[in-house]
Amino acid sequence: MPLIRVARDAKARGIGSAVPRMLLAFFSGLIGPIIHILARPQGR
Image (cartoon, rainbow, N blue to C red; front, top):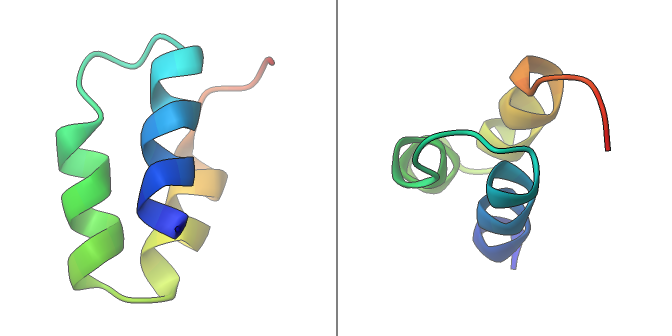
């Protein structure tokens, strides 16, 4: 589920490709989605 959330969020924010962020979230376990939340651009 976190992978889907990361992908949707990256796409909604206009981040080029969600694949690197999804891989980061997958391989780093629980810390990956947290890193994505902290590193994502601000906005919607």
